[in-house]
Length: 298
Picture 1 (cartoon, one colour):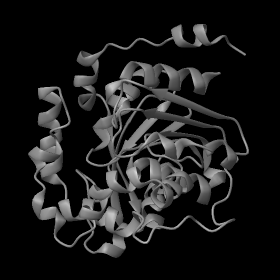
Picture 2 (picture 1 turned 180 degrees about the vertical axis):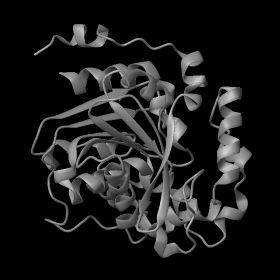
Picture 3 (picture 1 turned 120 degrees about the horizontal axis):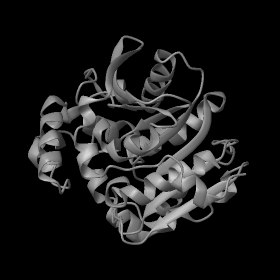
């Protein structure tokens, strides 16, 4: 086994913001067919496949720093969720159910001629990643989830933790009919601090379907009265799992992380980042990228 220090140093040269800024000119853009729905993804590098799944409000470019740092050893494919940016935007609530979102990830893997991948997800992408690993363990080599607790942990907190219920009010608001009317591309991009990156986000959100974004909440976020999943309804995960959680996340509180290890049958690594918020892959980009690389190459 390679020492962690040597893994961190080997081949990992992050060119920083300048390299990430032109990433969209160096990736290959492709489309996977997911039962008639075109799923756009950007890919860079060669080697074992990593599929990265963004959350709300985001698009494939969320992973620019990680793609830069991992593509020397891996082929990284970052997709746009259906409804977002360059992916298709099918109409209707039923088109955003979790089984279809999971199928979109499988379509990207197949489009690249692979039968399995390392699955990485943040926020809604994390929810999709958890579900993908549980439904398709044979296609999930390893799992990395950022700022999205295990579904069991989040459900437990919604039932028992009044602060989590209060902090989830935004999701209940999103589930209301017509909630997309209060959204704008500029408003959704407000969290992006770099002005040039923010321009890219505004462009991507103008190409997106705001109702589709809300349909993911309507179709998949737990609804009141909250209840914990029945025993045996979610299988333990058989693959190694790495989790990151920015502790300044006010939407998904850290209490939901407790007992995650009870739902694992392989090794589980949890990295908490005290100074990072919900977008930990952005707030602590270098730490996240280096830790991912070390964990994957151990």
